[in-house]
Length: 146
Image (cartoon, rainbow, N blue to C red; front, top):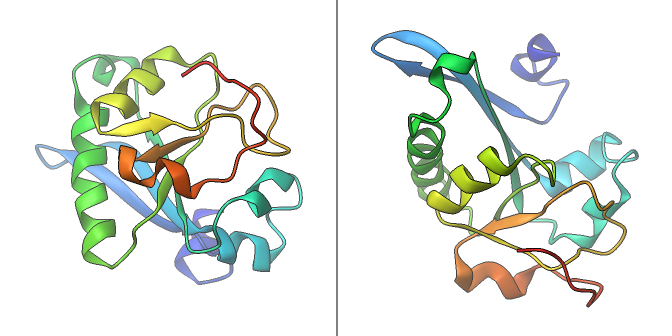
């Protein structure tokens, strides 16, 4: 899967997260339009409700020792700076709704919860970076835990 990204067969852009020269995690980004154009979004119909220029990101830390130390939030902040410098303006992340640790880290990095997105299953919690972008994500007007 990573080889497909590096060689251009998958639209996601993969990056390693390093601390003191050691890999401690992984982060990737991908424009929503590119996911939909590639056919990779077929299992996630709610993606078509997002603005095509939005960039989705995924983050994973390598092991439990790195959790709860602020590494996720710090890595996100640096990565967000990178994405904004590239000209992206709408950045979303979709943690599992029951992953409270991740949701907390994403809030700390400036993400805010989006009310329920059309066709999005209840076990996914859509968040967008920055309150000023919150209105850019269309919703189905049902309430959702923020």
